[in-house]
Image (cartoon, rainbow, N blue to C red; front, side, top):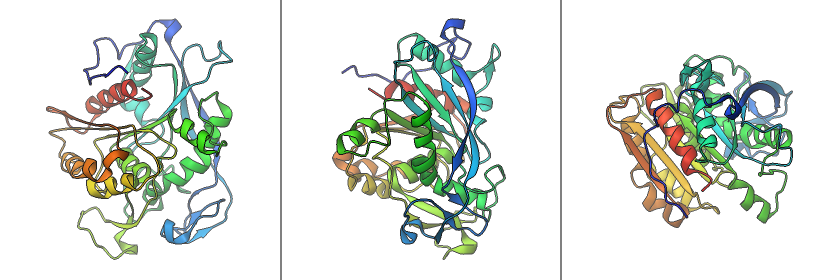
Length: 340
C-alpha cells in the first residue's frame, strides 16, 4: 500500500476546478427522532439506556433538520457507481454552513468544495460524498450561541444518537453509498465502516474524540457535581460508548476544550471490538484555545489504545491559530489519507 505523507495544500487547489470536475452542493432536510428536548431529556425512538445516556429518555415527535451534501462530478452520469462518505462537523458557533462559508470562496465556489473537486480530478482520492451536518442534536438546534446552560449546547454531546439512528440511515438510503447501515451482519458492519470517515473542527473535533472514539459527555455545572474547573460552565457526566463500529477513519482539527484526555480515549479504543485505521489530529501551535487541549488528548492515547489504533497522525501547524488556515489543511490531508 502506498504510504502517503502530509503535505501543504498545492497552489490553486482552493480555486475552482475545471467545470467538468466541479461537484454539486445541495441542502437537504431529514427527520431527527433522537435529540435533547426543552426539559433536557433525550428524545429517542430506540431502546436507549438512561444510565448510559446520563439522563431520562422519552418518546417524542421528530424534528426536521437540514444538512448540506456535496456530490462529486459525474454522480448523476454514473448511476451504477457507489461512493465513500466523509462527514465534516462544525464548531461551537457554527452550523451546517460553517465549513462552506468559513473555508473561503474562490471563483464563486466554496473553497472546501474546490479542494474536494481537485483531489478527485487529480486522482488523489476516489470520488466521494461529503456531508455537512448541524451538530446540535437539540430542539433548538438553530441557536448558535454559547450558553453553558442551554439545551442547544447540550445537544453537541448527544449528536452520536442522531448520527447513528437518523443522519447516517438517511444518507445511505438516499444516496448511492458503499456503506449500508441496514446490514447489521458482522461482515456488513466490518465492510461499511471502512467506507465512512468523520472529522470536525474545534467543537466538532471534540465530538469526534468524545463521541466517535469514546470520551465524556458534558452538561452545565448547574446540573452536575462540578468536578472540573474549565471556566466555561461545563462538567463531565457519563462516558459515550463510541462509534468505531461505524467509522474506520477519524479526524480532530483544533479539538475544543471538554475534549477527553488521551488515556480516556485510548482506553475506549483499546476496549472496542473495532480497530481505528486512522486518527488524524492537527492544531496550530499558536492556538491559545486548543493547543493545550490537543496535547492533553494525545498524551497516553496510543499506549492505552494498543493494537486498536492503526495509525495516529499528529500534525502541528507552525504559527497556526484557531482558524481555517489549519482546518482546510486538515481537511485536505485527512481526505487524502482516509479510505486507504
